[in-house]
Image (cartoon, rainbow, N blue to C red; front, side, top):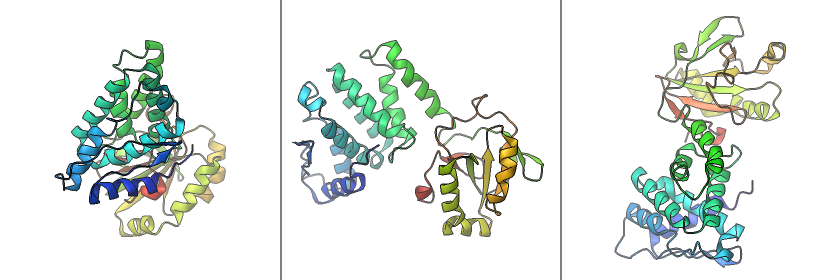
Length: 297
């Protein structure tokens, strides 16, 4: 996954929204044709809304040179995603619907956009992964006539994945056994905030992220104040491995192994390990499959 200047481009787009005019950027040998925001729109929210609703107006989806230019399409899409979270949910939904309707004029363009959306919003290693934004695209993809039912099958499966334990929903309950051999359940795990981590003792990435969290000042401050508890769960069945590696886990976390069959029962879809969920006191999902660096944003 190449990270195409995401943060720098976000800055330029925000600059465009705040000081007026439009920003032209060469991408793949072509300059993206941003819409000119009317000078009468002075509020940042107004400017963001206009930019989003007209973002693709000057892109000719029927032009093969445009559609097949990977850098042009991907960077344009990344910039578009940077603005999407800024506007109201209804505006974001209307914008995605309008874009996907326009793309239906060219089946090649439609498939290209659907694949780029999957790459940046669904694949777990993407720096911009977002179930909530991806749902906006899936809602359109699953009802289009451009794709066959066979092609839609993949997206239908992805829709089921992103809707499970969605942000705002109550996290699915499950039973676990802690290091002392006591049985507990997620919903009876009392805490103002719960950091739920599904991990694998044999996973290098898990070890790296657990070490980062072990020494995270904000997390440790929350734990010490009693505002947050961490529940780290091993969801596989190699009990001996889990016991062997227990000593390596942070001592101020509750570490356990799943008694309920997490994966076989489809209780949680663990696309990448570790899978981190931030829950409120009622076990509502606040953040799903979060990255350590944006946990406390």
